[in-house]
Image (cartoon, rainbow, N blue to C red; front, side):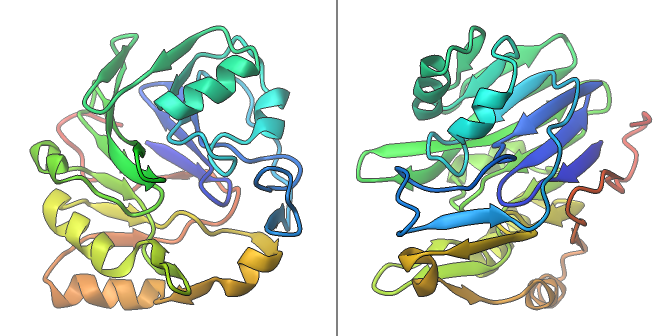
Length: 258
């Protein structure tokens, strides 16, 4: 299994001889409803759009997960697996091969990879977006992704999971509290899934400005999270990937080579 961190919530996942582009924001700025006075994200270093993408995987329909300018740059014939809300975005953009996954549903792909949707982040009072469990069938290696730190109790049936990508620190707002939940929530999911490796998402080599950005507060650190794991007798390795650098995830072999 190879991973490339493309900043924010964007990842290139390579498993089962497939290249999966997850929640891509790769071009232009990141804003919500074009209100850059409220919030604007920018890349400090632009990453090229990966070549030969086999699948686009979208966990949410918000711009920081289904970024319209990036999706407009990609070939509309690339297959997409998406949450209900993200499906609306890509269909409006003209994507032709879209599979919508509700919670608990599985997309089986070419006898190589299975993608199962899990309950993820609540967006508003009635909408719960997707987390994902990816399984490489040849090796039985598994990867779990949830970008805001909302982990469903239903995950227990998938344990153990080899790789977890989720926030490892908290980002808070006044009166709201933690809306990106790492720290104790990341520890809880580590205790349930017993991963070999954990990686933090929702960061990277990016800069933010605007009214909302001025109110955000980061609580915790990667080193503090490593200490939490150690204090709870967990041997999980925490990896801090370099932005844009492809790397082989160091996993103990499950009788077959990666």
